Length: 144
Image (cartoon, rainbow, N blue to C red; front, side, top):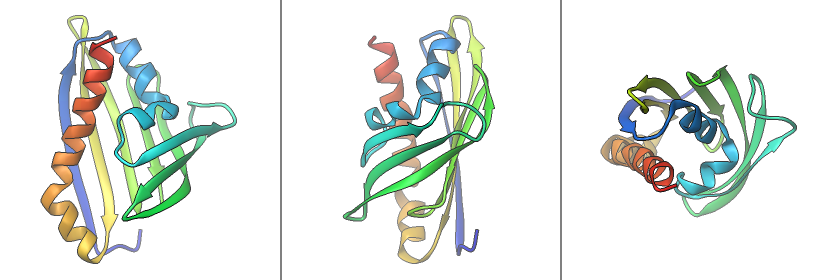
């Protein structure tokens, strides 16, 4: 990774929707524009989602807009999907799902490799952003 600091945090929440529906939404990278701050476009390069599938994500980060590849590194239908990208920093994030009486328990582990001032900033507010992602996901799914 070649970073100065590795930040890890896991958000968790029960979403009042069936597991198959929640997984379908979370595994579809094109939906990230609905819940990831700064992402304006995300599209699959070829078929997705599947192990090894790549999506191209356009995002604005620290005032700069860039398009970066994001790879599906783990994929278990209705159970787990994990994405990884190297730019603008190393980030690995995913979702672990469990059926919970007609609802779905969602765990959202995030790992970021950081340097310098960015490491300090993420230590201060990273968990709030990650919790916010999961709140936006729940609102999208529960208001369908």
